Length: 493
Image (cartoon, rainbow, N blue to C red; front, side):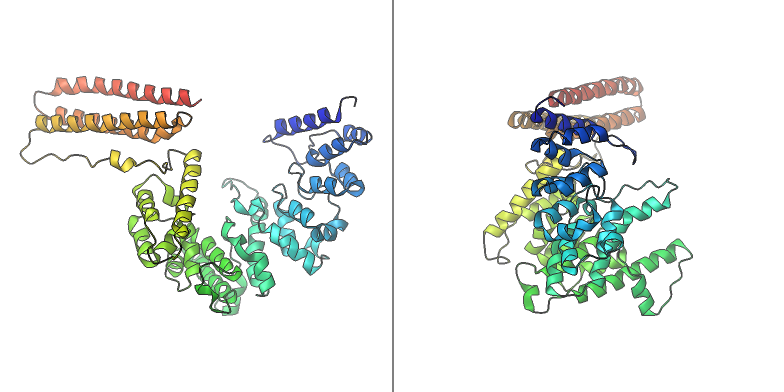
């Protein structure tokens, strides 16, 4: 109560940082209500701003909202530590939705409860009285809330089915808007590219199935799966037709708002593998539908991406650069990397299109590699060159000659890998994790080769003792390899 406002503000920040990530029961509050009231009595603008930004007490925030200026209201709207719509009186939502700063702060706030977001998108509960204009302004930001960009964590052993239902409601409500909203240009502008990033595809197809007039049983898992796939096709057919472009703009270089909607619907459906649905999206005549498929489908072999590249060339690579599976450190990922480097030829007239695609690929690859270097490769690494195919024994070659030849090859491979490790560490000493995939390959190849050597010598007459000695060597190899990995991790930290 006696320190400077700056010290109070810093105390709030430190308290929130300490509490962040810790479990908080729904009835628990980080800051004492009586202390907040006493701090408000100081009437210091900076202290009021700290309370608006970090406090999670409903009554305190509501009182501050009613008496605060625009700055205080924006701080409460963007406060990510409060729960749901805490601090926002129901009567003020029309005012919130009419102010560009407040509406964005409230409806893009990731602290919003799933049920609250669903209620707003459904225009139910406290939001029934909102004007159509105000609601649509809020929908623009609500569809872009981080809650919808991450699939909720599911506890398959939980007894509470209501939790599963409530966390899924916002996704249900979002996809239902494509059915309930009239397909006008203003509505298309509100929806537009929001559906490209909705993490869970939850098509509301029950009404479409009823309209079809063909009741479908679902007594078994297979029947349920059939119903889901058929319902998904009905939903996609309806949405893609409803939000079609009404002119020839579909063939333009850039997507319209309606094309973004179709692309987002296809991207959502492609995330959940259903054989017939995937074939439907892959071969769809609408290129923006195919663009959504390219951005999210979990490609599983080189043939599938080669077929897509043959079909759409640069259009495929332009949209597939957003597909995380094509950055994996696999033959699939390396094949796609080569495609990204190809020139577009006559596909695009502007040279900068190739540069933009490659720049996006480079930045995406670096970001993913930093997240998990064991799964994603660094865009500057060519690990394929360090993984040649293993030798095979010639028909008339003795086991000893073959093992000598194999040992020479292994020596060359490991020398190349160790040289590459040194090169990478010298180029970027602040990023030692870059060499972890190569160390993993080094350890795996040593284990594989020594094991093969043990098996071959054990089967060869007179070499049983040598096989036992090689087993001891195998342990030493492991110790050396693990020591090398520990050294690298030590330097990382």
